[in-house]
Length: 58
Image (cartoon, rainbow, N blue to C red; front, side):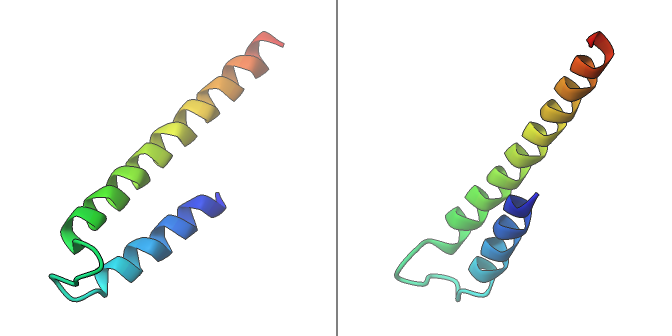
């Protein structure tokens, strides 16, 4: 769960960069953070589903 908050903090920090910042491409970084957030959501859903299955079989 803590990872979601870390990703959200990173996303907000990246959003505050000025467009065209020389250290990193803001738009690409924002896209990666969005992708990470979606993967985190999918992983959480899979984990919950597996826990339900294990609970039902045990």
